[in-house]
Image (tube, rainbow, N blue to C red; front, side):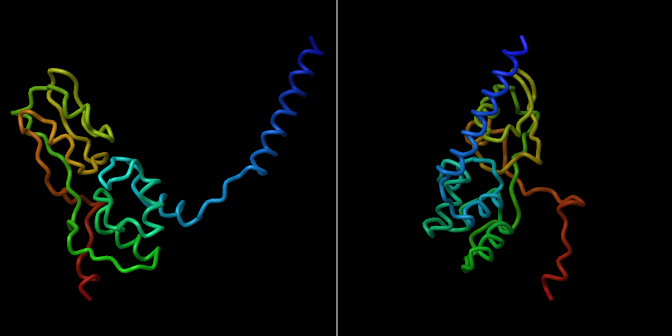
Length: 174
């Protein structure tokens, strides 16, 4: 019994050391700026930018193949921060000044679950034949739910200001 435990322990230790050595030897060199830009992105992998995920969008932004304004969920603040980090100038005039979120008109909702199935961030709460609601903190404003809704009960509205999202406009004006 003790021999079996010792053999398995030594085997695990040897394999762990070999994996650690292989990790160091076969490591792929990555651009650290790509990881930094990817960490700045929202991480929802919603596909609104035209890339499969936030990693692909970050690589394209660093290479210069994509604009820093291609991420609608991040909004104007993210685009400005990305432009500063990459040292480029960005035209922010076409971006919405505030993020949009989905709002469901409860009196029109029949509970078909089509919006629930297409939401990439699971921001819609509800079940079949029940009224649905939107979890505003998770909504990225991708409009996939509004396109999928057959009753047209979902509309996109600006995010309401709370104590967490309100900013005093005076310092920016100065």
